[in-house]
Image (cartoon, rainbow, N blue to C red):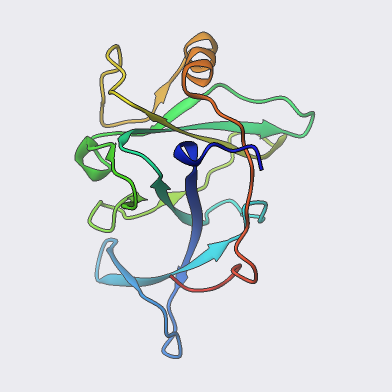
Length: 182
């Protein structure tokens, strides 16, 4: 309710776990040192709990054409947030291609990225979670240079992005989707 149709963004969080012979879902094969490992992506609820060391992927689908930016902030036990970091785009994920089209699912990292997942790391004992902001701008952000690493953003820059491209937020969760394979 109250969300404009052209601002809808579908976001699915996937936790990867080692696959088992009995699994029926799609697998991702990652080259990690000697040999390869098969991972099975399982859907995580938007408020699901993750642990240090979990391997995750994010699927995003936008309702309009534009350019995708994903910002991560740590959440702390006292309710405060850490500095904003631009985690997508980078040249290591999808070769830096952050263009989106309506109805096209973007996977971050992509299956052919190395590795094809993010690994959760705790930076402080007081860290209680993550806040991920997904932005779709109509044009590329001109002052931004895409590099091979995440980039720390100033609070002012992030606030201006939210003001420019922010919209009413709503949440719709897939019924009984948690734990379902990709």
